Image (cartoon, rainbow, N blue to C red; front, side):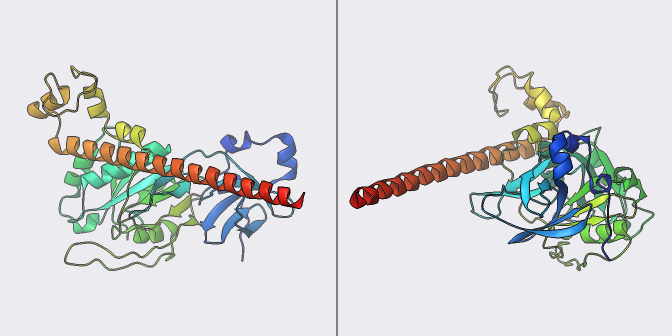
Length: 349
């Protein structure tokens, strides 16, 4: 049986309402992307679920996007996004991959075992902050950890304003601290590497087994992919839960602002360096190195900052170069096509 939802239950807010004219509001149907497939999108609106075939003249859409359909269910236009997540596609491909749109809060999940990594958490936080969403760090498998609070303190030290929750994802009582971000119409996304217990957490948040769960390999505390597609689910409390596949490789691009917001301590120290182009190596008057020497800043954190800044700059430049090359090829093909058309026209005349 298909459940009908109101627009507010689907995440519709004044941000999207203000993008419609009165005429559009009367004529078109606001619809949200709840699943993405190779040849079509699965949408949900006031009338229930429906499929929208992908067409070449449509913009690139992703799970969470809002769009307008006409009375016959045809695509009219997409609405501006409140937040947007993307990454460089895995491997050597020079292409940006859309992850999700219009997410309010991201639960950045990391397990309390040998797979725990502050560097990985900082990477995810950079992505979340650059996308324009709020972040809550959820440390899973707290029931298997003798001193979970020591890990909470380590993560909290990254940012005093950062919300950190240590949970047993199998226990509904343990995750009640997350309820504040799961109100009606609020969109929550889960990000984390494979094996951190995201699927288990999703099942507990939903109150039923929506996702399959996999075993952890004893050798390295790493898990297997149990989620392979981006899907959207509705929680009993009214929130909207967006699951994303476990990401073994998260390369960031065009994410400079997100990195700087994640490392505000270093960004603030940079302003005190003697030279504006200080690389924080062995330059005289480097406030960052002085903070490391005094114990105010960890050298690990500077190394993580430098790695993410260099990675996002390299990937951004590579993607920009590819886009420029693609545009040049398109212009060339168009000019060749135009030339051939003129030659044929001359032959006919």
